[in-house]
Image (cartoon, rainbow, N blue to C red):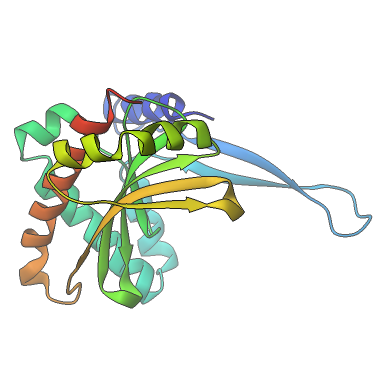
Length: 201
């Protein structure tokens, strides 16, 4: 599935009535030794309120709950910003440590990551299995960082055949009074990185 598939399902869920729900599922097959394949469905996109219902029914662990609450609060805040709203589509908050926004290519995404164990927030361009694109961007590193207005951490993730270009900030996730300052930092970095990287991608 590509980013445009997720965006289409998200659009349908945002533009239909409350009794109609759309899901995007990925089918995986698992075998143990010589067993017959077992089918597993993994949900990649779901209705906006579905995660809330599941959360209440299945009581997520404390770490997942913190992530979910943070993403809900971030999007509620971020989409009050008109520039942000004009550049990004709302994503369904999840229990995962990252939230991903489209930058116009199925090979890459503009992600926010919560690293709770290190009290660190990261905004990154994540490139999946396209080292040619990464090397093209790396060749323009000086111009890219000048346009962004800040230095970036450039990493080749060879074990995943992927790469990331990121900036990090130390934060206190437990202090909710500081969340809006964190959100302002994230919004600023997302907007500048999208504006800078999109012409190259």
